[in-house]
Structure formats: C-alpha cells, structure tokens
Length: 146
Image (tube, rainbow, N blue to C red; front, side, top):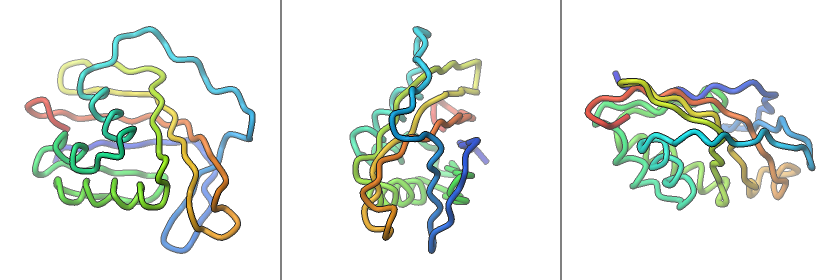
C-alpha cells in the first residue's frame, strides 16, 4: 500500500461528519519558508490543492495509493477515493490553499511542512471564519507517484 500521511499538532473541533482544526489565532505569524528546492511531486501536489484540481491530485497517486488525513480521520484509497476526498474538501473549503514551507525527497520518500488554509462554508458558527493549520505530510512513492 502506497500512502500519504498527514500529521498535525493541533486542536480538533468535532462537527457532524467533519473535524476542523483551528490552531493559529487571527493575525498569528506563520513560520518562514526555506529556500530549499521543492521536489517535483510535492510541487505538483501543492499545485493541485491550489488550483482546486481533484482530478489532477488523483493522477499523482498510484491505483492503490492512499490519502490518509489524521486530522479529519479520513482514509481514501485509489485514485477515485483521492479525487473524492479532495472534491469534498473543496466543497467544504472552496478557497483551500497549501503554502509550502519546507520539503525534501530521499529516494522513494518525500516530506513537506506546509500550511493548509481556507474559509469553510456552512458549519454554523464556524462558517466564514478563516483558518491556517500547520501540517507535516510524508509521501511514499512508487514509480514517481504517491
């Protein structure tokens, strides 16, 4: 099984069928990005998030790839599962954005520190409130895909 694991150190607010992480207070200073070159697979992955491209994200994964997001307690398998997860996220947070802070690749492993941000729609009192979440993701690669 090839996987992407998203790890976060944050406070989780449980909502019906969704968890939302809100660790940075409004106006908080985010960590600075490094000047390290970004591995191609990580850049394509961030571009897919930033262009709201669920199909493009799915193409980055092998047919048995897994996108596992521990913050949202979600595990999505295969390209259709990955596309579905990204589409659901974009429906709930249409302005989803990935800001890369640092990334590297060694052999068939890559890692990235990034900030996931956006403004959820709906969700009662949480709707319309922007958030920024620090995230570390680890990629296991096979044939250049996740």
